Length: 134
Image 1 (cartoon, rainbow, N blue to C red):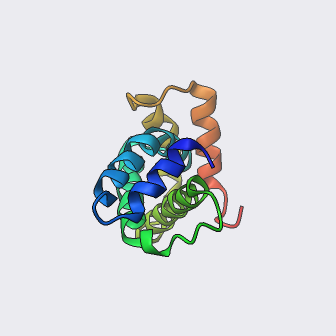
Image 2 (image 1 turned 45 degrees about the horizontal axis):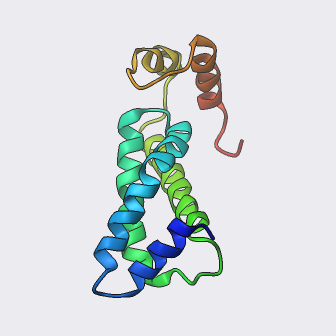
């Protein structure tokens, strides 16, 4: 366990320092979680929403963290599950039509936060076409 995680866990255990511990957790994990989630959900707006939901879930489930894994492992698992839930939710709202799928690459290339090239955008478009099981 890294020193940040040990300090965060120490702060989270006491009711007097729990809020400070959670603020530290958010500060340490916000950026790496954002980029991990962003690779899954693709859009900046969705990544922000997933990140917010992740931290809400972490806060509400802190008492269930048993320490059987590293804190970072537990946090990343929550974030990835939230990102996958976001994708499922979006798919359930409306199936993406063939025309809309063709705009995924264009949408990514127009996104100020997308730092990839056209090949990466086309790859993500192809991935979006894959069935859920893949």
